[in-house]
Amino acid sequence: MTEALLWRKSSYSGGANTDCVEVAPTTLGVVVRDSKNTSGPVLGFPAVNWRLFLTGLAR
Image (cartoon, rainbow, N blue to C red; front, side, top):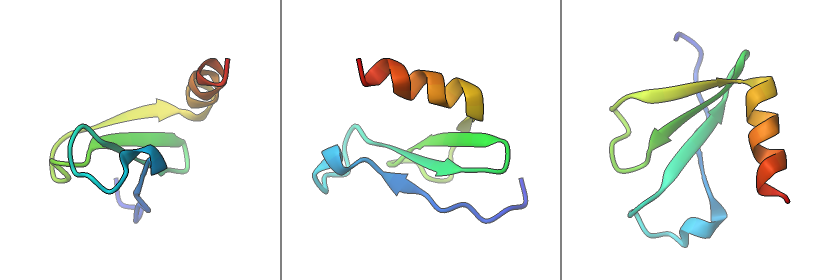
């Protein structure tokens, strides 16, 4: 992945660095990583799947 990513942490994290994830938009969807291990692996989700996930959370 060569594009620069703009990582965001949930506002529900409350500034603590425990049990947090960060998300970043990409040209194909969204990537997610552990905020405690920023150089570790990331999970990628296509845009349509991420929208379905967010819709499910809003219920």
